[in-house]
Image (tube, rainbow, N blue to C red):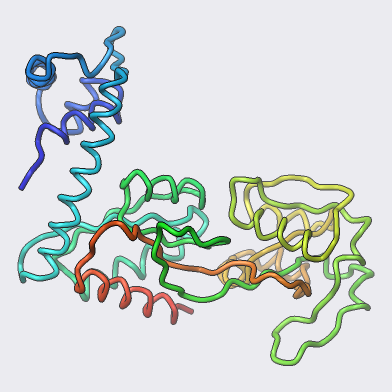
Amino acid sequence: MFLKEQVYICTIAETGSISRAAERLYISQPALSAYLRNVEDTLGIPLFVRSGKRCTPTLIGEKYIKNARQMIALQDDFNLDLALTVKGVLGRIRIGTQTRRSPILLSPILRFFWENYPGIEVNFEESNAKGLLAMLDERKVDIIIFTATERLPELSYLDIYPEELLLATPLDHPARKYAKEVLGKQYKSIELKYFADDMFFIPHHSQSLRNTCESLFANSNFTPKRIFEVRNIEAIMTLVADGLGVGFNRASYSKHMNQNRVLSKISYYNVPYDSASADFVIAFQKKTQHSEQFISMISNLRDMLKILP
């Protein structure tokens, strides 16, 4: 089963150009132009507005593309289920991961599939949490692996582990004297009120860690006097290590930061607050009827991710 027409039209929409789409599809530009004309003639209405080499979908073109993407996704779902059911049949799974986690996850995930599901082709997409959710909604990926700060009703979730939020401060911050030991916790606990005069380096609003920070501030009844937004968490830790302020990190991120010079100048603390913060999860669409084999494969992937060092 191959939806040639839908794939060709969607590729033109994604590239915005017949020439670039032809390159991606490994066909000639004249052949693709002729194919598009035949489709539009059959429908009796143009799907794209041509402006030079640029192709922009018309209103009906946008509706066609939306439905075509759903058809292609359904085909991919079927092929994946078929591959998991019939030995030797190739399938494909498209996995979305947070850009920050990709260097950590890419190798073990590929190894997992190569060793356990060699007939499955694995494709990766990277973005922040908001971008990953949009990709899943548009069916550009089959599953996403990310930090969830809320649970959407249209998605199914497989929990990997809860994400612990850590406050990072300069090693010699005077507030360290207020830190208290907590039974069963790796890090001491400290309240935010002792950092009222500090600069807070926090991620942008598009990042999941920012949502967790905002939740922490609300539940702690604390409002930073000064905030400086920084997109890169390693950069935030560098600013903290240089004594310019304080910031936040996730416990799982801190384990994989290769910044010995920086980390030797940072102290991590737990911060008391009421909300459940966030969880590291695998999420996929509820409305897609996945096979038992698919659910079993994703559950096995979740179990593997749970024990990563």
